[in-house]
Image (tube, rainbow, N blue to C red):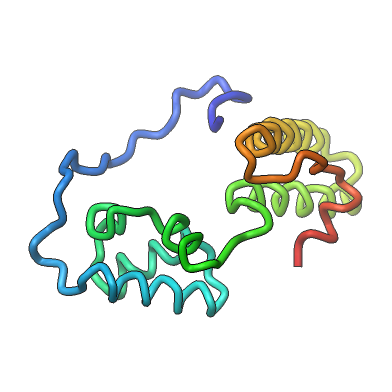
Length: 151
């Protein structure tokens, strides 16, 4: 989705190694990692931030290699669910910030166009999540209620 509304080719970045086994130098076993994930989630961290904390502070390179499940799958199995998926929530937050900016800067044409792009991404992603069952069938994005979703 990142290149849909631009003529750029994307960013070059490092790729994850193509290994399927757990590294031998990881000090934590899967049960400890799952308990750390649940603890961090109860502190209010989203799954992406949990992955960064595990990487930086606990030395866990990839949760899926060690636990054979992703962070969201672990949280779901422990009974912790999110109302809205994290990527959709981040897009909604961006749209709310852009609308606040447009309230103060009404002549910012570039931001108005980019707001249309972000909201189209929100609608397409929401359509996907409704189809897959992550969101209820009646879920709709509206800019008026989006500000209420964001805390």
